[in-house]
Image (cartoon, rainbow, N blue to C red):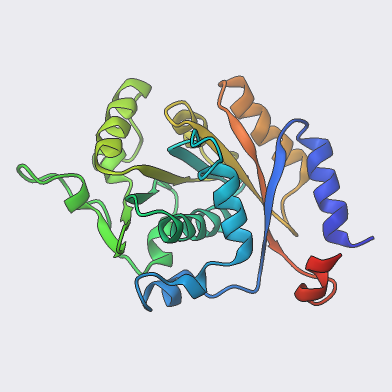
Length: 246
C-alpha cells in the first residue's frame, strides 16, 4: 500500500464527513509561468484541476457555490497554490468573470504566485472594485486583502465583510478566497462565515492529522460549510500515467 493512499485513508478517517475532493501532484508548472503565456493557458490546466472545478463549481444542477474559501492548517502556500490553479481552471472552463482574493494578511502567497506586487489598490474616487483588481486573464482577476480589509491590518466584523463580499459579487460571478492557515490566525473562521463553503488543503508530507482535525473542528464550531479536503503536493510511487489506470 502506498504512503499517499494511507494518508488519504487517514484524512477521511480523521475528518469524518469531510470528503476528499482531489489530490494535487507536485509535477505542475508554476502559476507565474502559466500566467505569462497565452490568456487561455489551457496547457496549464491539469485533469486533476478540471475534476476539482467540476465537483465544486460546475455542478450538473448548476447550483454550485459562488464564494469559496481555500485554507490550510499551518503557514504554507499550499492553499494559495490550489486556489490559484482552481481559479485558472475555472476561468478556462467558464466564460463568466472569476476573481481570486488574496485574503492572507500573514503572507501574500497568492499575489506572488502571479507575479503581482500589489493587488487591491486603495479607493480613490468612483473607481469600481474590478478596476482595483489586477487582470491576469481574459476573465480572471486577482484582488488583494484591501478589498475586504480596506487597508487595515485586520479584517472588520462579519456584517462589514458581508457588505464587501456583496460588492465583489456584483462585479464577479465567482470568488475564490485564499486565507492564512486556520491554526495561524482566526481569519479562516471569520471569512468562512461570509462565504458559501470552504475547502481544506492538506499538505501530503507535513500536515499532522491532529492539526487538520483541529482546523476542521474550528470551522464546524462556527457553522462553516466544509465541502471537503484537497491533498496537496502528492507524489506518485509509480509513473502518473500508470497510476491513473489503477
